Amino acid sequence: MDLSLIETLRWEPATGFVRLERHLARLAGSAVDLGVPGAEKARDALFAALPSSALPGRAEEGEPRPAPLRIRLELFADGRIEVQTAPFTPLPPEATWRLKIAATRLSSADPLLRHKTSRRAVYAAARAEHPAAEADEMILLNERGEVCEGTITSLFLDDGSGILKTPPLSSGLLAGVLREELLETGKAVEKALRPEDLARGTILMGNSLRGLIRSELA
Image (tube, rainbow, N blue to C red; front, side, top):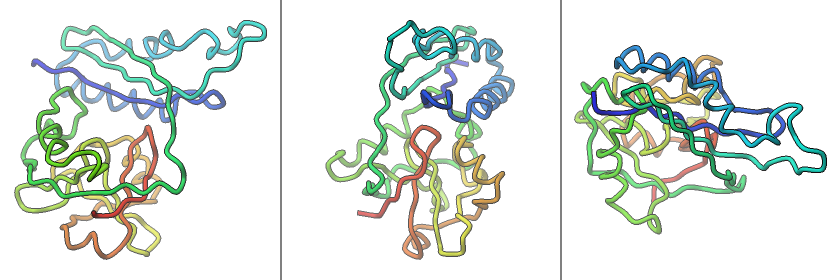
């Protein structure tokens, strides 16, 4: 299969990799499902990519601790792994994303949507529908008109009940790491959503890198 598996993580000086075990578990599960070898090497590859000052007991005397990092791991079909690191700048707490609903549709019957892969054409097409000056993120629907996800985020609806609502995997969407955590801890439940439902609460877009981001339809 001509695709690669991708995990994008945040590394913090005080706590290390955020949701590391969940990212590794998702990668391993996708590797089994799609027949991609080499997932067992991912942990070592991630730590090898960190600057020496980030490793316990390895910082040189007087060397400043590194800032938070965005780390992208890609596992290729031949088992090769590449890791890229870049500084991570969090959004300000008061940030609000502007959303638009894409004309591009997802297929709920496509099993690859549940995996984070290099197959990004449908998301790129949705993102290209509006310039960044008009929309920070695009919401994709499926062929039934159900809400699925953003191009790089999972969608959550705060309807005031105290438990977030997020579309089920059966609608056709990525099994996001942050989404998984919120479901397992009881902070969110799955519920099929339609565009009109989004007006009945506060929209939150989120992923493991950035957390939850307050959003509104523009």
